[in-house]
Length: 325
Image 1: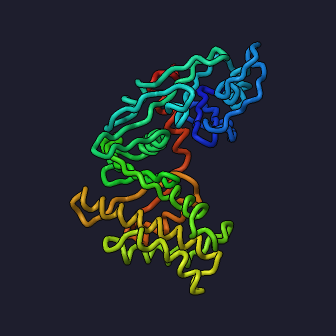
Image 2: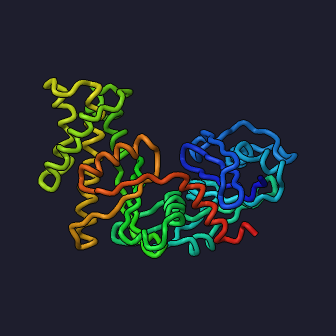
Image 3: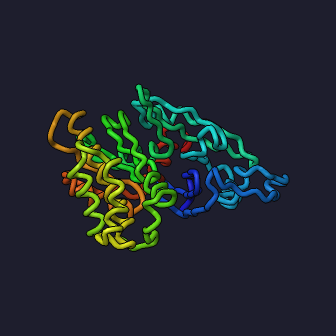
């Protein structure tokens, strides 16, 4: 089957490349550790020229042979590659944002191979405390394109990670989103605080310890909050109630529990209803499994997991931009 598009998901730590056929079908994919903060540096020849530019080197490693085999393939990229620290900055688009507004705002970069790389802009939500995303907008749009008409009306799309995003959608648009730095806070506390001193970092998932953390968060949220519960990840270890293997899972449950308790409160207030929306999760399967478990405890009854959101989103954005002929 003939390829029609090269799609790149280019973040801070990794670069994923997809060769897509009609309808966004994945013909081939690759994953490189060449995120924008760890680009290759050894010079080599590209298109007959000695090149030392890290972005050009990573781009060529990801898909140079695809472009040689099939010259003229359009290329689209999303993620931190379009940030101020990226290959070429693609300015944020304001909410509400949809396929049309993003697809017609791609930043074009002419690569050393003579190929234009079309970079997807991020999305900004302007308010007293502004919110931004890069890469997640493409995943959200990929999910929306696969939904039956009308299914996005009582829906929240969650993207767990270092900076978890919870995205409200309406009429095919990203209209509002909240960010929780849960994953990064877990890493900082585990690696750089007293809480990590007694943890077994590589411990397998312990459901009981995780659930205990979630329950503690739910039982105290709104009264004292996470700043008063975090130390229990250490004190329960000192009293012998949590083993080193359990402490990391307990801390994970505690932080995710506080995040989701706050999310539930925000959603009830914004929707002026006790009924919580359905959830679609996008991301790492193991992390999404933790969130799904905690979401159920927090009262979010309908939770599902989306697959192939990034490549679908990139395909539809390329289509909206007129890159597919």
